[in-house]
Image (cartoon, rainbow, N blue to C red):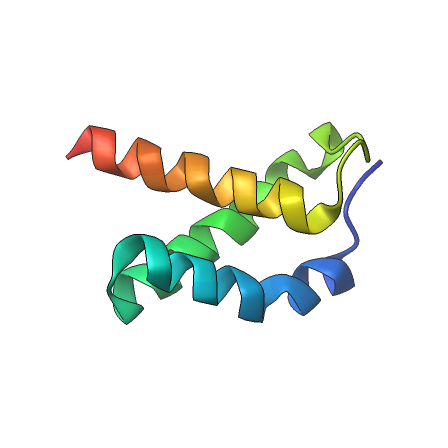
Amino acid sequence: MALDPEILAAEVPDLTRYAVHLTRNRADADDLVQDTLERALAKGSTFRGESSPTTWLHRVMHRRFLDTRRRR
């Protein structure tokens, strides 16, 4: 089950709020949102529909955030 780009677009405000909470910086948050959406589009076929798209996207974002922190 692939995610519809319209669903992704509707999630941007919530993702932005969560990204600001994680990064404490608006510029870093914007980069994290973009990275999350790119990853979601690339890996959207792995979305199985067992959770809501919101939950899945927030999990993708959290993992991307942790990956970035580990690399530093």
